[in-house]
Image 1 (cartoon, helix red, strand yellow):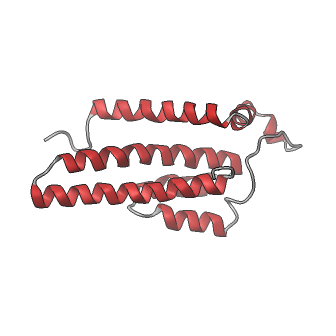
Image 2 (image 1 turned 90 degrees about the vertical axis):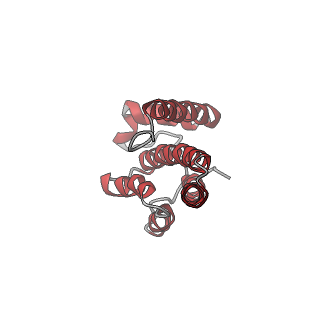
Length: 154
């Protein structure tokens, strides 16, 4: 299912849309019923998926050798509700999501960079990559929970 950059990016783009829906639903529930836990749950899920989508966008951008513009568009699209889907469609239509994971070195001189070698090592071990990304996202998520929500606590 996640064997190509396209598939992984698409799954996370859809997950980000679902998480936006949960957050917005939580905001509506809180506004209409006063049930603050709805935002806590929806916001927590959205925050985690937001970070996971950002990490995925950076990984796919590195693998696909995107320039700064499509990488920035992909990452920033998570900030705008539901923008990850049109972004994914644009990236797919322009061929930026085509191809496989770069697990073997090629004649391209960029493949000799330490970060490209490290990426290939991790891409050859997808479970290790998933665990490392999961730990990194969970760590950032935990720090953000400790810092508190945007705008401060009520």
